[in-house]
Image (cartoon, rainbow, N blue to C red; front, side):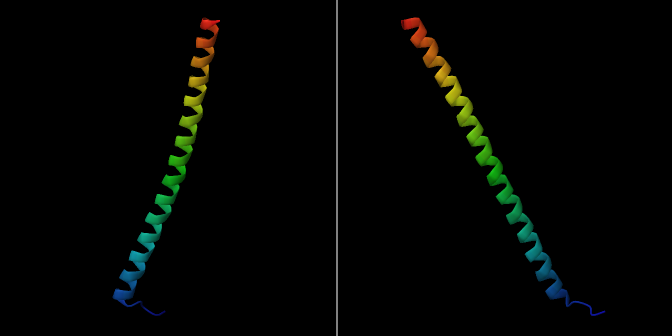
Length: 59
């Protein structure tokens, strides 16, 4: 079995850490997009309800 050079081992570890961080950031972006989409749907539902109530009161 060949032992890795300590410098190469350190560089490989840093690359792996960077890749893990990049994956986590991508996952958070997807969650944020989903949360924003859900919020927009809920807000639009609330606005539609308020408009309907106001239209019923006026007529």
